Amino acid sequence: MTMKKKSKHGWYCKLCGQFKSNEKFSGKGRSQHICKDCQHQIYEENLTKKQVLKMEKAQTYEQLVPQIASLIKDVDNHVGALANVSALLHSSFLHYFWCGFYIVKGDVLELGPFQGEVACYTIKKGRGVCGKAWEDKQTVVVPNVLQFPGHIACSSKSRSEIVVPVFKDEDVIAVIDVDSKGYSAFDDIDKEWLEKIEKLISPLFDTKVAPLKEK
Ligand code: SME
Image (tube, rainbow, N blue to C red; front, side):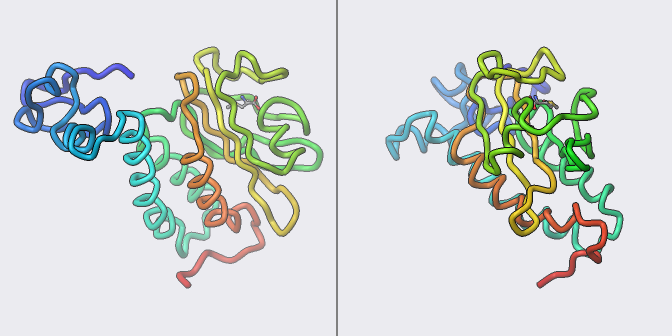
């Protein structure tokens, strides 16, 4: 993760990814680009940097769930709603390089709304990470795509990937696909929260379903 200075008034914190003013950095944290809040968690609560990163990630996902719910509520333009969900996710995480949806159409997955670089249009069942998640009906986390047999490289910059199947009853009707430029970018936190998001958005893939209403 490259942390560059945004302006002379502040920095991006390497751990929480937030832009903070100069006063929010001090001592060792200033040279390491770790803000006081994250430093406090590391030193006072005796957490490792990796644990802090995980906490920040979980907190961001937790905040995103109600945002996604309100973003898609009462929207009958399901393509637009899915495009907005991918935009929200993509802009919320530094480790997201490509984020979007592939939708089951007959015996292939077809490219749906996404954020990121151009991507392939169709993926057969069992092919690549997406096709594997569809076939196995379960989330696939790939720490190094270069070592994944049959990985479909839409971008040569991708290094790790997570694919979460979207269900209607027992059937997979789509997949959520997220790529990162970093190795091992996705873990149990991403899996847990993307599977929660899957439940929220699955009605959007069924064009016969009326706009989502608040429960
Ligand atoms: N890498 C995926 C293909 C889709 S792109 O990442 C957008 C796969 O192996 O299924």
